[in-house]
Length: 237
Image (tube, rainbow, N blue to C red; front, side):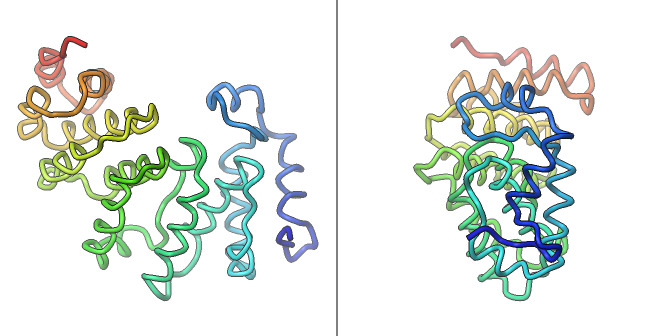
């Protein structure tokens, strides 16, 4: 049964009403092969998530919708807004969300509630939780693990160890490959001296490393010399 907001609208009604300010053709062009896209603006979905989190969000989380892509995105955004009272219960909620991810945008718009303080207090457990997804057989679960490790755990000091975790990923999915390239580029940006030799020796596929090098060269956070050093290590496909 569709969750009903305090004003009487259902979540579905509210999402459909937001279509008028969206751009469905553009959103569909960014998500080839994904069905039931409304084309909503991300800030609009985020605002609705905040509204739900301020009401009886446990009832909502017991039956979040999954028909529209934006319903799945909303699910993750509500999890960003709630107060965490039990870490393990919260991670069970996040795990349920991971099971409904069906696009890169549903994955990448997720953020943990509690921000950096939550991650710092529970860094070992969160890292363990995310690392487990790297060997999952579901494409978007693997992407989730990669993107979240990149977002929360790559630092100048940790970049080599995170790179080692990334190198364990064997899932062949396109969106896994793209996430790996993004994360490798971020590791290089944070610790270029440590990661540069890894670009030459990493067991990751040539296409992944080459895509990472392309992202490195697109970055505004690196000097021309750092970009050139990485570009010199492009591999033959």
